[in-house]
Length: 196
Image 1: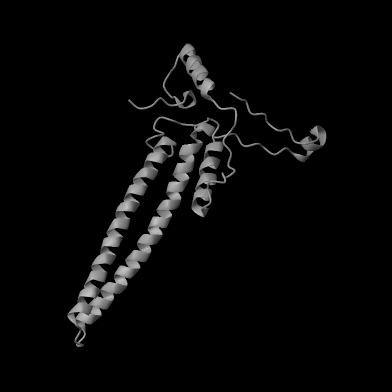
Image 2: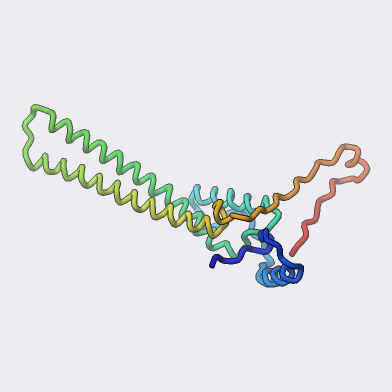
């Protein structure tokens, strides 16, 4: 049975008593400290830092709370996995370039009229095979990393299926005050956010 969604995201009808009970249970687990877009010092890579900022900003743009400080660990792991995937893709690209160069060299040798020794030919064939093996291994690592990232996205409600039936509201944008209202009221009033 899938895990229960937070009461803010429940679409089905709940009685007032059921809703209140769920809110109290979730409120007991709600941390006092809020999740911020400020990147933790643990994240040093450019990709993981940008993934953190983008993801947290998306969460903060919603009125309903989907993640909290308690989810910080899984969010850190998600960001690190995204950085690692980019690195694996870079290694795969290098391995593919090496494989292609060796294959072109082997093709030239096989089609040239020059006589090449069997040891040199064997070295070239082994280099091509080794390059292909590296590409295949890196493909498998990248596929596994993508699978892990997808699991993180599901846990963080970042996939369409994990949000199925959930329709979180976006925060209302503050309307700028007219010049006349600013003169009359003084400084613009800031909306206070209700706390849970």
